[in-house]
Length: 588
Ligand code: ARG
Image (cartoon, rainbow, N blue to C red; front, top):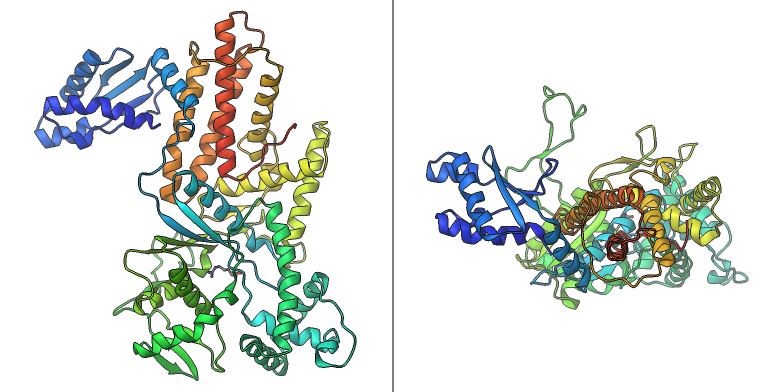
């Protein structure tokens, strides 16, 4: 239910009658007090027909009022303003209430979308850099499905890179792998082991070239499925994926496919051959590269000081070639991404493929996208989109780190969320268990993240995010819990909404805005508008709750209307929170 379109439709015959361009019967929400909606087209029409905008607007308003009794139009300085009567608002509110999708209109054409998010790396500990991808990806997926698309979510685990050779080399040296080399008893590969061994190996490769060479060789052996390396690799993968699944579940992040880079391995040889056959490859220091730069192409580098208008923009020129095979024949990040697209093309007829990673991977994706287009693996009408997000920073404005400068483990962040949420619940004297603390902590973090424009960096300020007041996840949860408790106490059967107060009107207008913003989020691939509008709706409900006695209202018809409206607010909030993948707890 799009109120702007609905009123726009009423304008159409009037525009037609007056001989105005019908496509300009466009309505927007008004920011003026006491005005609900407006049409600003008189200014454009004035240019088109060579008349005064004030005359045009007042003619439109006059004609509109002749035909519509429940909405009042007026002209103020060339703007056509609309005020919706309580009767009209009640009618639309009931329409939304009775609609099975609560007024959300699905798109007429459904797109098939592959959503590649999460992207955890096997053998490496999940860290804070892997927090935004499952959060944003999960919510975009839910939004797209709600609007009628078919979404296939794929966690695309990083399981085919150098970290495997590094981890195996280190485990071997520390004596954990003797069994596999026929030297001793079997020792199970555990997560704790990996958490210790990979960072050790990763630090060592920087100074120890012999070790690095060994890790390089082992990585290749795994990619060639050579034993015992391949078996060891699978053990590592198993231990790692279990932990990844657990963490993602805690974040309310779910996947249709638990594929990884390795899933595309059977296609790699074939894909490399396509590039060779098309004459797209050349050798460079033993590696196989594809020139993806277009003629005369320059890549602007970020300014050192973005606020300085006089600083000259520097260019990196040209776009570097994509390396699709290593000097030793091994596979790289780009190799698996290209082969994965080949596989996706074979398995699914998709319209769009979205990738959610840190925006610093933009170059990688641009190279991959260019490669697959050059090779004709992807059709022109299929969209490949990298949704690059900003970093999560500490209060010092730098990427969020531990106190001693190390990267923070995701597991530790989740623990932090739970313990901070517990503090808050204790402060508010709410009885709690771990489940409740987790739901609130996760809501705080998700909302704190999603309320920002995706591409922007933001400051991770858990104390602020956890407040039960203001624009936060817990505030929205709290509003929903409060409505639930009102409804539990009520003895009436819910029926129709009959708006009679400004507070109720304010709620309905905010519901319109929530419904309106889903499309904005869809286009922007960002959920900040939904966060803002849900917050505004929750605030409108608080004002209503504070000013109006809901349960003790003596007039039965009014009381039932108040309760029915409260239930509608709860439903709209629940629908929005579902998209944000935020759970509503039983109590708070
Ligand atoms: N594993 C990657 C990382 O940690 C993210 C994977 C994103 N998806 C992709 N198809 N490349 O950065």
